[in-house]
Amino acid sequence: MITRKTFVTSLLSLATLAAAGGSPAALAQSVDLSPEQPGRPRSQPVPEALKLLPKDFRFAKDGVLTVGTTTGRLPFGAYATDNKTPVGNAPDIAQLVADSLGRRLELVSVAWADWPLGLQSGKFDVVISNVTVTEERKEKFDFSTYRDDKLGFYVKSDSKLQIREPKDVAGLKVIVGASTNQEQILLRWNQQNIAAGLKPVEVQYHDDDVLLYLALASGRADAYLAPNGIAAYHARDGKTKLVGSFSGGWPQTAEIAVASRKGSGIADAITAALNAQIKNGNYAKALSRWNLESEAIAQSRTNPPGLPKK
Image (tube, rainbow, N blue to C red; front, side, top):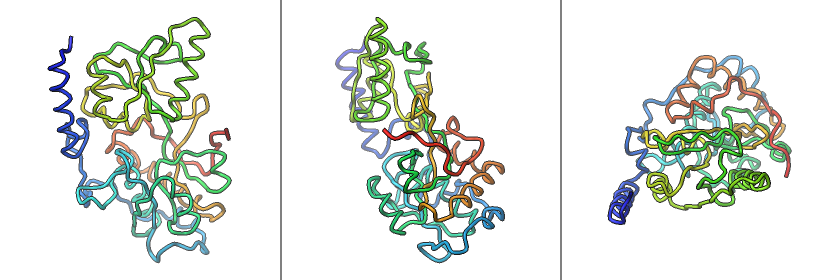
């Protein structure tokens, strides 16, 4: 049983860690957040990708691949210790694409809401920012896939729970983000379970990651349904574990992709570049640096079927 004194002490400890510049998981293990990124995988130019690069494609800058990326949260993207250089999995993938095309990488931090206009206006050549392929987005952009879009159920490392289907969440206390795709999935599952005579889910919302993980640790919540990449990054400290994985578009599958301007012709070159990096092992290294191996794809595709329009 956790006493009030223990609870408050734990809360203050976790808050101190967060104030120090990162999550407990991030601080528990060594993570390279330096602007130099010496461990970032690099590549030589890829001939097959260069052959597919349209001769009339207009880059934002000569000799440069300008990539728009958001810097809100690891492992996808955040600022380095200099508070200005983007680091994370998206910058790592961007580096491999730029190297494959024989160009210098320039990363431009952009708010999520602003990337479509920035890409369409030519401010960026491409956007690499955890963008899911959807049929609606395909009307305006081309895509080259590089990761599965997955959701994950995470629990305390000593929990016996396994979540494989909707009925497995019946009666559980589950944390989920408000107004998110995963919340809608969880609520649909709950309605389905109630209709089948099963116990309802107790849905919990926490805006603060410190409080969220404290709720899991203290037993006040049973599970956390989140974008798998974010929760997997936190799980690096061994205090939580994955017990169920589902497509981010459940029941449809979904993929994360590099976005480029519709009809610009660069998507096929980027797809070839990504497939070369998958083959030579650099892609796997770029994912493993951020604990994203479970979202690896076997092959990049140009404009695959996306999530349907709502």
